[in-house]
Image (tube, rainbow, N blue to C red):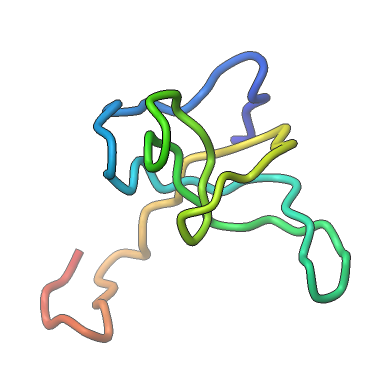
Length: 85
């Protein structure tokens, strides 16, 4: 379920240099085609002591909505691991 950023933000461990909490965000403006998209990002304290949304280590501005990542399908196996979820 999508949540408005102004109403509720993801949990943040507040540890500097951590990736943070993985989430889906809206909108993300793609620099290649200018289109707004849903994108996976992180919410945490990667660069600053204030929690922000990040992608590839850069702060993402103007995010209006976010949602937690869904659980993987039952029995799904990560391609790089042999462990099931």
